[in-house]
Image: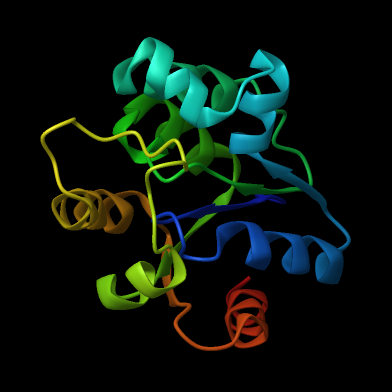
Length: 163
């Protein structure tokens, strides 16, 4: 029986907000892979991205996710975690994986600027192109897809109903 939950989705999908509330409701520990990266490397995601590039940031994300003990945890992953097959297999093996679906236009409303978020994409790729590329991977790796375009409480309730 898997006693952990992992949240995947685009930046702005609400993974951290939903994750914190879910962890509180279910009395589980909350972990955010982006925060773990920043605290371990003592740099923001954007600094890592600027200094080492998007591929290195994705590599770091993979290593950090696979190092998280997945016992009674709600894990909020970085949006680019789905580019690591190993990280995704790890969280699938140890948790129920929920893709927080939010339409692109709402993502842009929630995140007006991606320039300081440490958004790991190819330099020539637009945010919209990255969104649609990732959407396929989010659906592929998730156990469940949950709409999070309304209230966070509704999303949390839907996840609790499913588990």
